[in-house]
Length: 120
Image (cartoon, rainbow, N blue to C red; front, side, top):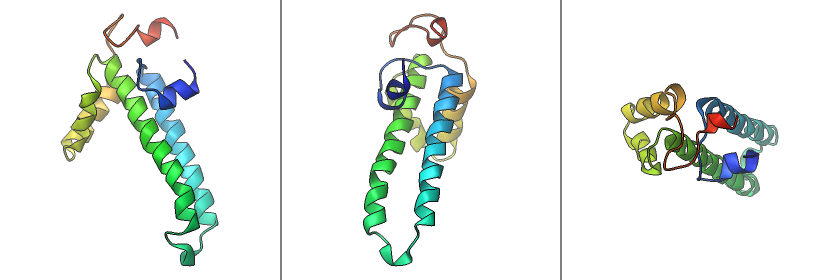
């Protein structure tokens, strides 16, 4: 289980601590890239070259968030379809935050793999 698996794969399970760490890492990367782009700010280049450079970082950010959340839903023994709960305004985000960031995962092996705390 390495960083590439954590950020890009939709298989397996991660515990709460790793979920928080991965989210902080992804948000930190996004903030760092945004700061670099703001230093290079030139209002004449709106939707130009810099915008095209930022697209891969945006795709990485969205993909990583999905991958991290899917693995955490798996740790709660729920399918990836639970990602859709966040589409419900306010209540969905609160529900997902409580489920993913606050509640413990299922002890032992489940249908998505072994308990991540057994190998930590």
